[in-house]
Image 1 (cartoon, rainbow, N blue to C red):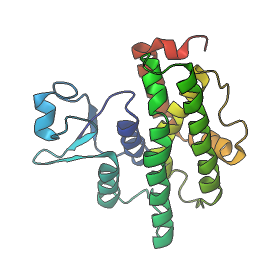
Image 2 (image 1 turned 60 degrees about the vertical axis):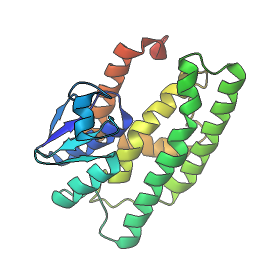
Image 3 (image 1 turned 90 degrees about the horizontal axis):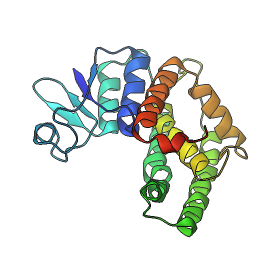
Amino acid sequence: MQLYSSAFSPYAARCRIQIHHKQLPVEIVAPPGGLGSAQLKAKNPIGKIPVLDLGDKTLAESWAIMEYLEARFPEPAMRPANAFEQAKLQELVRFTDLNLATAMFPLFRALRGAVGPEGVAEALTALQAQLQVLELLLARKTRSAALPLDLADAALLPVMFYARLLAKHFGKTDCLATLPVTSSWWQQSSAVPAGAKVLAEMEAGLRAAIPVLFAGA
């Protein structure tokens, strides 16, 4: 099996966290031909990553890949056994993708000069509002000692990496300063070896691709 990935794609990164945490037999490689290429579109018609190549078939979309890998390789578990807790895990992932991640889109556009100072200020306010919702969701999240890292943690870590980095770049020193639950979650989850490894890969890739993000850091 191969996972088509890049160093700083948050959606490929969440799959890599799962792969490393479970020590799965998945080779992590660059997408054939690059993003949007004909070679990649032959594997995934939208030409994006991540893609899991099984040899005779492929699977795209990070959450679909993660659920497939969890079903095929259930140990060590990254999903609770209880049906309600499984649904709560998916609830958190849906919030991450539909609310938290999308709140950062204007800040990514601002990196290209497409959003002015007023728009950046509005985007930072919107991002902080979503982080406050995340604080409430994480406060209700239960963590079993048997699950030092679950699928929701793996999905959220790369997105939170970008939230903290973008907020700092645009002048907000620590976007988690008033969010003790989220700050504690970040410190704990980012220290798990698989999470720490992938976050370091993301930072190294971004420092090479967008060094301005780390100016003064």
